[in-house]
Length: 290
Ligand SMILES: Cc1cc2nc3c(=O)[nH]c(=O)nc-3n(C[C@H](O)[C@H](O)[C@H](O)COP(=O)(O)OP(=O)(O)OC[C@H]3O[C@@H](n4cnc5c(N)ncnc54)[C@H](O)[C@@H]3O)c2cc1C
Image 1: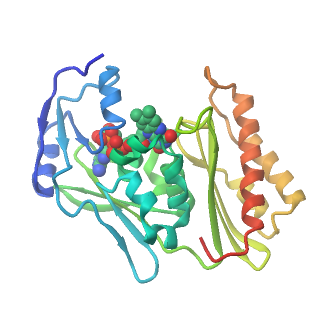
Image 2 (image 1 turned 135 degrees about the horizontal axis):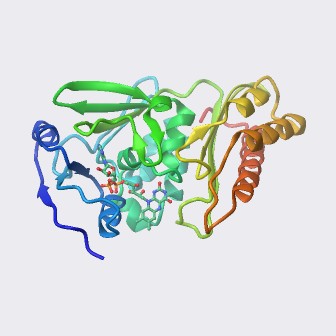
């Protein structure tokens, strides 16, 4: 199918993009188009105006602060995230997520920030944002605001962004000393959206876990952390007893959807498997903070 008719604007300044969003009730930002255009072609959405941000300068930057915090602009593609030595060095869990996202052609066009704004429940980046306490930088003609990841993802394909706001960047704070992170998932084929996935970050002091983040995707209406299971890991070494308890709490907490790809029980089972896999991987690492 083809998209229904729509108007198209390609502003060359951020201010003019924000004016267009403020002046049109039914406008949508167009970034890489890898989610928005399929949605329109399938007639699941019919915005009256697309505001193409691809010609706006400065939005394609990756900025690393002295403390290792990384800010990724709205036009940075998944491929650029994957290839960035700065992100690999300072925020490896972000770099680890990128290769899981679709195929190379999709990563060449699709943006990291677009994925966060789209908030697909099975997408990797929203979960990475939750695991790292990332901050969303939104802007509009009314001004700028920073939204913690924990408040940003509000429902199925829904976020805290207002209709007139553009997500200018995502900021990943410096990793704590002793942090290690990984992204693990189960998909039917490489490049498919995950049936279940986990962005896991553990902070170690020696062999002891002092902080844990288990941020799941594909198992609910949006990415979500599982606080009871995180608490079960803190103060332990991630040994088998602690893992058994964490896996039990993951299964007890999550309420995954059922669809043609898998039942709720199957996804619940996968979530436990992924918890075990991620913690086992991270506790065997001896390298520097991730
Ligand atoms: C076959 C296929 C497989 C895929 N597999 C995966 C996968 O495994 N994992 C995954 O995470 N994604 C996957 N994707 C989606 C892909 O990652 C998209 O790139 C991403 O979801 C959206 O980024 P985009 O730049 O293309 O955004 P667009 O498609 O341009 O926009 C998506 C939505 O976000 C909004 N938006 C975009 N940027 C902004 C902004 N800066 N401010 C405010 N709103 C904004 C748009 O208005 C729109 O509603 C897949 C896509 C395809 C076609």
